Length: 348
Image (cartoon, rainbow, N blue to C red):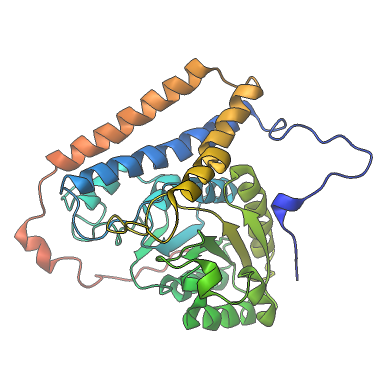
């Protein structure tokens, strides 16, 4: 069983380690910066629309956790699948789904990915191999294994990223799925997005074992802990996990230690932690700011370059908000559509 912690790796004796990120091409760093900034600005706008009453129901923001999905998408290939829980907007944007379609779904409009009938927690994209956010805690984990089972059956070398949180990590179906996934050597990466507070209870109060990924040892599943505020560390760990799965060695667990700045949902005042704690994370560990510093200190970009990216992202997000406002509400006839599948095609 692997016991690697990527954030703790030390250089070999007698060597001077290169500055962090110095071997990463400028275009790659800019891509990470842009993708994380898109998620951050989109979620901030979603929070504004929720406050204006334009988004109803539940709304769980991803602010602070951007490096997780951006890093793992950098390790993915075309045809790989992803499935997650209700905190899902970031995953959609990271895999290339249109911000306009995502925002329109949040506001319950016809132009949304589920035609305005799914809302924040129920969006899907066949084109981008995104199999939804799921509202039942931990329910997506066995579904993710099922997606991986199909890939194993078809022998197509695809991998499924199955995301869940530290709260869901205590659900029984997770361990039933671990057992079956290892028994059948399924190509699934179990991604535990440990933001440390689940729905509102710290992991120290809710979970006896300090390490969540090591629970896979009971089933012989390999894994590791990763610094989820470092997009480069996430990408490297993702590449190891994906290679393990593509080689037919079975599942892999990534426990990605991250942190959300907002409450569990928009209705959560987050009184279970101090403002000072949150601000400290923002000041010292923010994933976007880390890449911004790498770009500037490595002379990969100027302040003006980054301002241009920020302007571009704000325009994309504002356009998505306007599109969501202008898109009509779904017609009453839509109540009777998309209830049953017309066919179940077998894809190679």
